[in-house]
Length: 132
Image 1 (cartoon, rainbow, N blue to C red):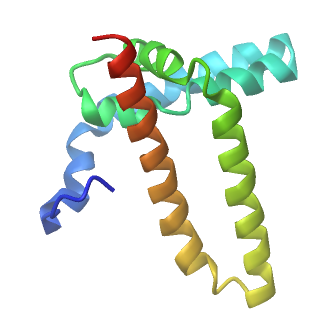
Image 2 (image 1 turned 90 degrees about the vertical axis):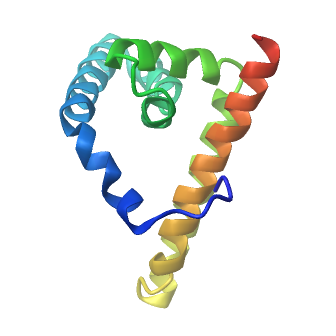
């Protein structure tokens, strides 16, 4: 999405940090579960607020899972509705692929991943502009 020429090895580079990613997933799951126990709507809002955690961890691998969740919350401040609309659109596109007997998923899944990554880039740039 950032228009760089990726190397083949870059595809598997995420496996070098599997321990941190696993811990981040556990922290994410526990926090969202606790918010969902409070009520469903606050839990869904927190899920959206934490949605950029994986991109934050890739851009800043030195952060802990808790710091990445906090940064994701900061990035998503004022953008939760935009992200919700994006997810709804992507879900509708995935459901529309049922018409093509799921063949459309071969195009929709990569496009959806790229759209979410581009969303992160735009939110991050706006955040950096507001917080120099």
